[in-house]
Image (cartoon, rainbow, N blue to C red):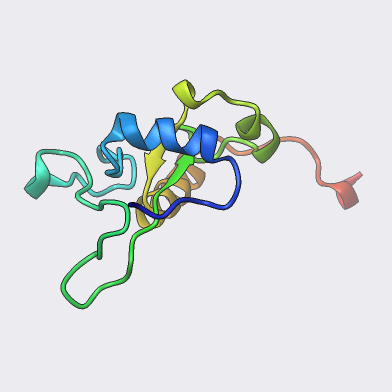
Length: 109
C-alpha cells in the first residue's frame, strides 16, 4: 500500500490514480525529461536515484504560481501530480518569466 497524506486524501488519491502515481511534469520545470519520453520519471514512494531521496508526490494546480486559496478550491480533475523538485523548479521558472507587477508596493505610496 502506498503512503498517503494525512488530509485531503479524497482529492489526492484520484489525482494520483490518473497520473499512475508518477509526476506529470512534461518540462514546465525547465528539464525536458528527454530520457523518459518527455515526462518526469519520479514515482510516489520511490527514490530519486540509488542513493537519492524518497519521493512524495503532491496534488497541485498546473500553474505553479496559483494562489493557495484558489488552489484549495479546485476539484481533483483540475489538479496534477507533481514531485517537489519539478514543482519548485517550475515555480522558480514561472516567477522569472512572469510579467512585472506595476502596482505600487505598500510603502511606495
